[in-house]
Length: 426
Image 1 (tube, rainbow, N blue to C red):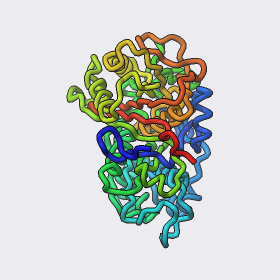
Image 2: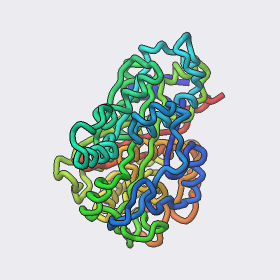
Image 3: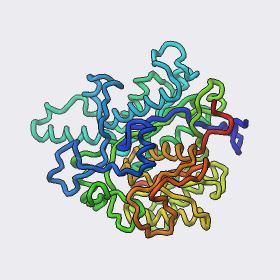
Image 4: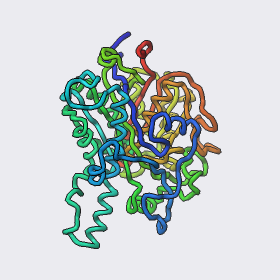
């Protein structure tokens, strides 16, 4: 089995996955919900939305952070960081790490200074910031929390993962809006491939179901006003906006050689990574999808694959007309006559903003390994020239998958993931 890729670089594999999402708190639960295409949008419970024009979101229900950080830390940590800490801890445990005593080897076969973290968020601790602004307005500056700054920092999740696990290697925070999660995994893969770390945990987190955040997106006209069970409907002719979501997704990466040497259970492989910028508009994509297409082509080149090798695309698919028209144009440019099956898991989870790309990368890894593509929820009639999977899962067989993320600012990111290398699993 070759441990290097087509360019002679170390192959990078996934040995752990963890999620906290509206579709489930574990990878298995999320996957079952995605395969069933059950929309998770519901009335907002995280704050009183009675005066808001949009009163629905995809919240992470039943999440208890106390087992991960303890009750004292919960009070001093924003929800976005708590979701990220929990998902990262689950991924690290899934990679085979034993109880973290910080003494000796815990099973990951890497010293602490050779373990890295790449964690991102689109807006950081926005809920904490909103709450403290209200506190300041009502009670004055002396009632502002001394914990506000570390709670709102966009790099708080990356920092706290390192602190909680004692990982002293490279530690990087990414903030590229809705492309954040994909960029974090791509940069984590590059960190491993270039030998900067032996093991890297990477992903994205977001908790922007908050009053001002929701009001701002609603005022932009970006949010759906349909009933919750039918609101998020990617690629459907009747889509009218996305549903705000929250959550976190993380993976553990290492070289194939390192994973084989320690007998790890390999879940999949990171084959390619691309990123580009539209350099066009702060919120709108290029109408012809040129920047998106270029990003996909960079990822394909990085993976050494032709478009015909891709088994399916986990599209950005936000349930917004302009973005999906641009994405459809990009897919047509890249894949041509190859009618690649496309899905958008945002019909189930809503749009997780900075966490979206990471959670969708986990979904793409599961699809690449099982050969089952989840259907797109609420799709009744597609008005674009795209082969969107709907109604029931579609069997395509184990194959590489392309996961795309496109963001405000014109940030484009794409990951190509694959099933475990043949013969690599126990």
